Length: 56
Image 1 (spheres, rainbow, N blue to C red):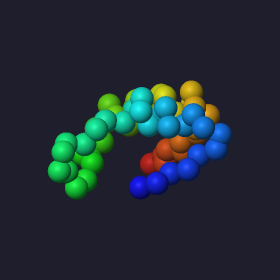
Image 2: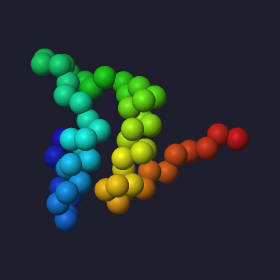
Image 3: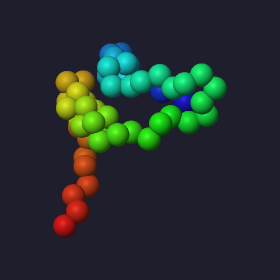
Image 4: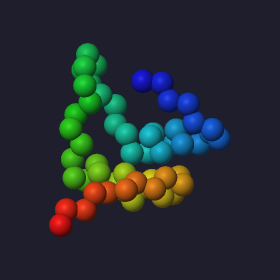
């Protein structure tokens, strides 16, 4: 995947919340609840707002 972001800096968010995949893997592991919570906590520091659907 190729992502272009301007201005630069958002790549640091991916470095902070991401994790390397195992060599030879063809897909990333399913994110855990802790992974999602970390992303939701860190994203605003990079000016990103993530809308979470609410179930009624």
